[in-house]
Length: 407
Image 1 (cartoon, one colour):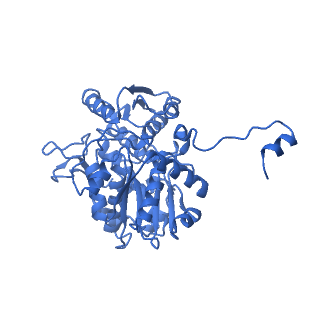
Image 2 (spheres, rainbow, N blue to C red):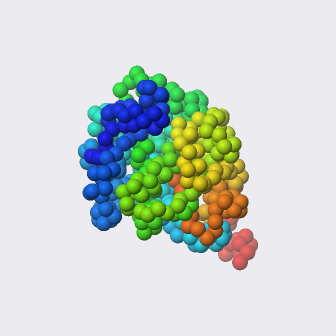
Image 3 (cartoon, one colour):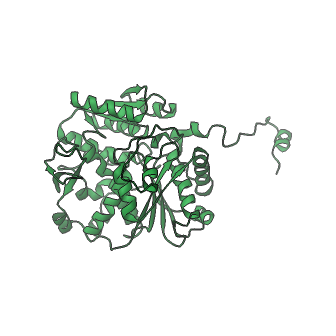
């Protein structure tokens, strides 16, 4: 509706609204460009507040030319004041943005897929596909079924069985590739050049990625149209963290928020931390790694938007930190046992990294802080096997109960 076209993020060359994702001159990634002058004339806090509580309440800042057809139940997830966890960390204004609930497939990927599928229909595709480490596979599988599109899902063959089952139940074509995510993604890029399929995170990526902005739009609105002073974000491909930064700048440009400062922190697993390495080495070069971590949803060794993730951290004045597998498990348990939120391994990463950043003094305990939780723990139960205690077995009588349970 208010989309001007696509624009190269590197050289600035402009392109029409089409199925394009790489600049043909400098090979930089393409991004959606909006007519902010016109949006400013029609969009207001009051107008947003009277709309349905889903991602489309921010429709002027999303890349559709027609009314949305999909994802009408995605978005507006809870922003929780985390009193108990705040006491543990010594932070009074601690919030959890919980995308592990209220979405159809219990992860933030439902935001980006909703945008991608609506755009897919605008372009006239009948088949939607993706390369995924799990959550995206679930979302594409489910939403494609509702949208009446054929779904084809490509995943690493060593993905957790619970994640495979959570895709298969929707009856897409699931292809398990004997390789890591980066190898899966390269294969999908080849397939996308030959078959007329809408790969949400490849040839539809410029539009798909815009859905991530709604995560930040909601945080700001739920904080009373204030930006948080700190936000910790898990990094896989790097799109979410960079789009959060874009969202803040867009709201500011439109006059919906003031000039408050937000420091953005990148969180990765120690076994797959190319963005963290680049930040700490003060480098703009992302050196690919071969992932080795229980946080498989973050196991992207060559992140497509890694450079922009690093740029976001630097521009915002934030930092980057990693968590090892043991710390990830501890983070999952800590969040569950303080706030009653069961997060997947990516959430364990953000909680563990937040703890480190506070202990390092990088996050001021007197400032507002948002921890990003992007997926539900039911998706990665295998990671907790043998690490959370056991049930107490008793016989069906009072004596057995009192022998085993010490009150």
